[in-house]
Length: 557
Figure 1 (cartoon, one colour):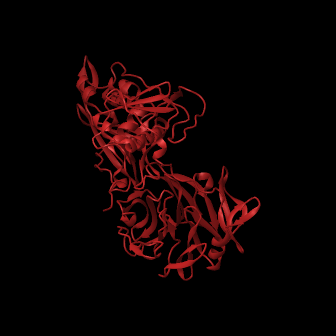
Figure 2 (cartoon, rainbow, N blue to C red; figure 1 turned 135 degrees about the vertical axis):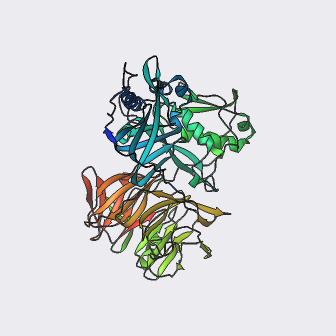
Figure 3 (cartoon, rainbow, N blue to C red; figure 1 turned 45 degrees about the horizontal axis):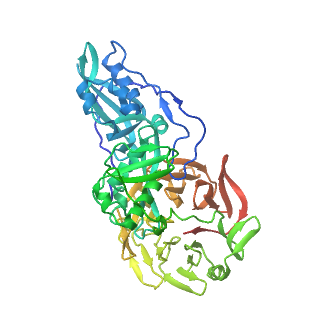
């Protein structure tokens, strides 16, 4: 089942009078650039300068100033609440959602005491911090009613949530990674959420973590260590001298020794903030004793070699300052097949190779054909040694072949006969991306991999990323939470775009002649192979040649 990401659309009222809402200004409350090992935080805490209601302000002025005041989450949006009647201030839930508007908003008087607020939007954040974005902007409308309090206009009824310009959203909100386990408990899988940077972020993170992973990461694709029903017993989460004290309900106390250790690992990883150096767990105030955390044996997404993996003439290996280092017998076996594309397996002991005859699984001692279908795209591998292959002209015909040679057909909702250019498993082995064309246009999607007893059986609900209408060329995992695409614009330019899963996309510039893109751990390890064999790397001034010329640029699992 394809997961819908459509936002509700409402008709725009007739005869709208444009009212451009002024953007707020702000000052940093602290200086310097702080590093965060896991979660992303703003370079500084942004404090919008906002004001309460003006005396004798009109309804339109009250609404305009309220929208600006709602950019500040300080003291539970206390200044924004001053624009509301007492009953409205008590009922309004600003954290219910965020509508991110593009361009100016419009106000239209629906009656003496009502104003319709309309704006174009393509993105929103829900109450759990989940970001969604559409390819096309659509009109959004909210109605506000007003009443006089002591002779002054105040907002009497309004929808929950806030509306922010895109600039204000990026200034006030930050992205944070919640972490859940893959089914083997070997890796932690990020689930990106967005929260206001000055709204008790530790509490928001832990509450969202206990609520559970995003829908597309469910269905057994990722797991949590917290016993079902576990909640925060004490709110907010207190942080004292760098120690986050997380007090749980009684359910947390039912966890066994291993589960408690896993709970702490999830918390520490998700609370990787500048303000938190360690985590203490309690159950209704009583310490929750956790033993040796090393029994968990879990790590974040595994790293890959930052050097490009290439074929240069008769050598296949990692290209460094001293030339191309070979991969021994494995590299020799790969070269024997005259490869068109290669994915090196986790640990470097195997590889999936595409050549004129199809896809083969290559090891130090053997080369075994696994898929002889025609027009296959570059294969991918997962951490269990399965080789994934799919024909370019039928994106729905995905196969995963085990080391035992057994072929597993993968259930998916990718349309049959779609033209697919890239299908790639993430480094953690829990997710996959698909980049393909349909009659309705290009699609860029990500899904969790579903397994039964460790064997892949299908792909979960797809999340559509808001790709442009450019012609797809290739796609790759840029890091553990971001996909990078290589596409061709209508005027023939090859463009690179970065798509965080659960965040706004970013244009990374023109990579002239690009035919293949390969990622690593960060945007700095992205590389593009051109039609002339040059390897490009992104620099401050754009995509530049590295001086390396190769006939093949390989992917690392």
